[in-house]
Amino acid sequence: MAHNKVGVMWKPELDPAIGIKYLAVVDAITKAISRGELRTGDRLPTHRDLAWELKMNVSTITQGYKEATRRHLIGGEVGRGTFVLATSREAELFSLKKV
Image 1 (cartoon, one colour):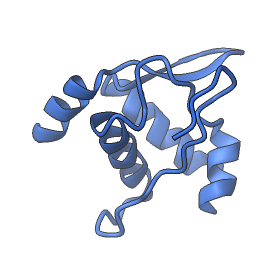
Image 2 (tube, rainbow, N blue to C red):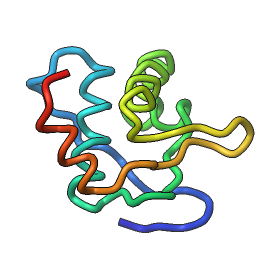
Image 3 (cartoon, rainbow, N blue to C red):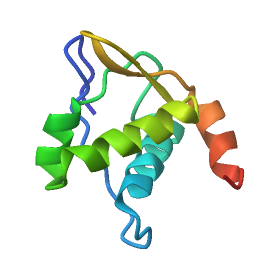
C-alpha cells in the first residue's frame, strides 16, 4: 500500500456476499483500517475516482462514505478531501458491533 500526501493508492476489495453496494464499500473501509492498509490521516480517493475504479455510480460511493463518516471511520473536509479518522483498533472494535 502506497501512502502519500496526495492520497492513498487504495482500491477496496468488496465482499460479494454483501449485496448492498454502499455497505460493501463501508465494510471494505473498515477492514482496510483494521488490517492497517489505511491509517489515521490517510486521504481516500475522491468519490468520482473510486466510483470509476469500482465501476459504480458516484452516488453509491457517496452513500458509502456518508455511512463510514456516521460510524466515525472517516471524515471529510470541503476542498481537501476525505481522510481516515479511526485507528485500526477502533475499526476492529466497530466491526464486532451489530449496526
